[in-house]
Amino acid sequence: MNEETTLFVLGGSPPSDELLAWRYEEADHRVAVDSGFLAFRNAELKPDVLIGDMDSCGLDESREPDASLCIIKLSDQDTTDFEKALEWMGKETRTGKLVILGGLGGRSDHFLSNLMSACNHESSVEITFDDEKEWVRRVTEQTPLRLVGRNRAHVSLLPLTPCSKVSTTGLKWNLEEQDLSHDQGSSQSNLAVSDLVTVSCSSGNLFVILQK
Image (cartoon, rainbow, N blue to C red; front, side, top):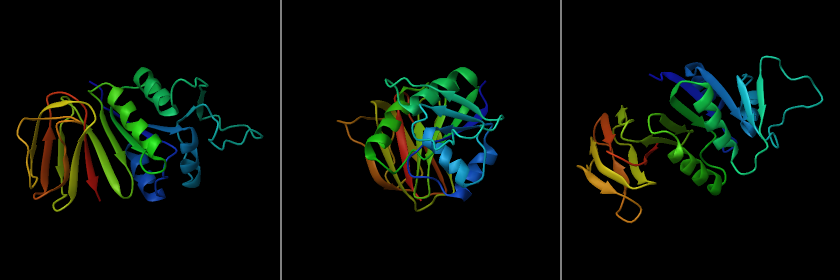
């Protein structure tokens, strides 16, 4: 059983030092994905791994890098740095939970690409994107969501691939084994009416978006 937690920091809107420090302490593996390295440096924290094509990580090539930092330079332009990091994680770790900072905000094409790449990763991994304004969690048949303590929060359900038998509890407008897809509807701006919200599906990649 995969029980490790991995933290990725990407190059989108940088996390606050406080959010990064919190997620850093929870993680078994801390990975800077190219320019995500800058967030670690600004927070005076050290990642375990730096991965990417290194075109924007800000690493000072004039100085010897920290010997404890594993640097993986991959110049393949057919995949994004996030995809490279996902592939590395699948091979080198036993990750059951992946937390991604710096994956929201910034350029919309990067954000959408990140969600699509997450869809392609194995469904047994619990994937969460986090920042100061939003929290996004992928739900699959193997990773149902149990959300505690968010009563009155606005919640949207976005099916990036066709999702079958979507069921929820704790929302103002609950779903019961409903199929969702881009052409069969979604659940936008729903409202949590309980301190316990659950979301599940039988297949597909459903993204739960929580406004903080």
